Length: 339
Image (tube, rainbow, N blue to C red; front, side, top):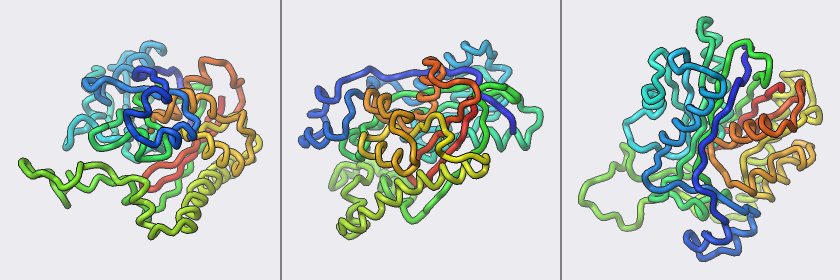
């Protein structure tokens, strides 16, 4: 499939210094500061993930002069749960934008959704030759009732969204290939134990403990608190990022060293440096600075970084940019964009 990213839009929560707000989330402030993040973005309680997605989408549509009624496809990738259960926020976004012709698709593969949404566009364009223009959106709104944005993970979660208008045959920022690796052995990581059909929420019942997602301590329990086994899992996570990049490059007939930029998750400083080393690219070619300055936006990370590259002019026509990440499930994904 031959399509390119035409325009971008973003929506971010309010910026806050990590050093100032960390005590709201944890007593172990020193550990949080060691991750290297300087700021994160937070939304007020009345802002939902669909609000962020719509704001970013409207910007992207306006920049390209696209009438929402002309969209053929909308792909929304989210990290956390939306405002309601039994509810499709991608269909809601379609209605909210006024895009009645557009097929709406929801991607819920966690933090790789901003990458796999491009492969979804490629597939829909392949099976629907009449589809010409699509909208992709990645969004994250941390649900703090279930998820501590600073303690649950070694990432500090930010609220925000990014969108891009995609056009068949567009000659700039062209999608070339995508690769995905999945490993279901770890599907239970970061699971919310209550609220599903196995353990429904029940009115009037007071739980023994607060209802929260599984966190890093639960992952340690999975590995029987064996530090060597846990370290091996961390090695696996990082190595598979390098593996999926290598696979995408092979399909394109290039080497990882040919990449002009490697956009990783907005991860902590140590993880970004480790993955860059495994891919064999200088850390200066990654999104390290943007990550530490803004925090991790889940499925919005990669589109936000593409928007930054688009605005800054750092990347020249013909340069290759790799989008790389991992997400719960677990999944590892890479997409190559030719500038």
